[in-house]
Amino acid sequence: MRDQPGFFDVDDRLKRLSDLGDQLEGFRAAVDFEMFRPDLDAALAYSDGAQGGRPPFDPVTMFKALVIQTTNKLSD
Image 1 (spheres, rainbow, N blue to C red):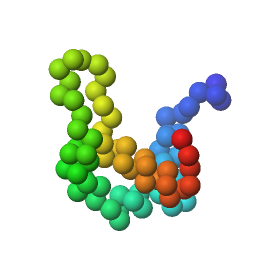
Image 2 (image 1 turned 120 degrees about the vertical axis):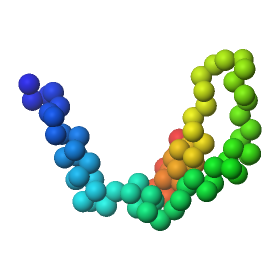
Image 3 (image 1 turned 60 degrees about the horizontal axis):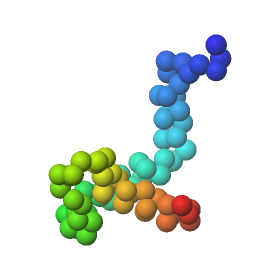
Image 4 (image 1 turned 30 degrees about the vertical axis):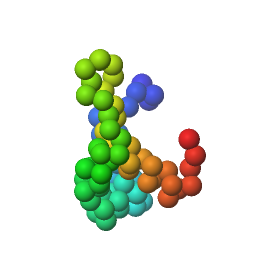
């Protein structure tokens, strides 16, 4: 039964990350990423979805991932 996550495990893990200085919380406090949405939408020019298929990822979320990847010197 120890391998099964408990009821408060997620909350405890998120609190521990916050106490250690969560990078996502720091970015959220410092940068308003939503101000980049119009520029990202214009630059990406996604299709209207008339032909079906999986909808694209949110451009702001992908931009956040690229910023975090760059600041931590990570590759694909």
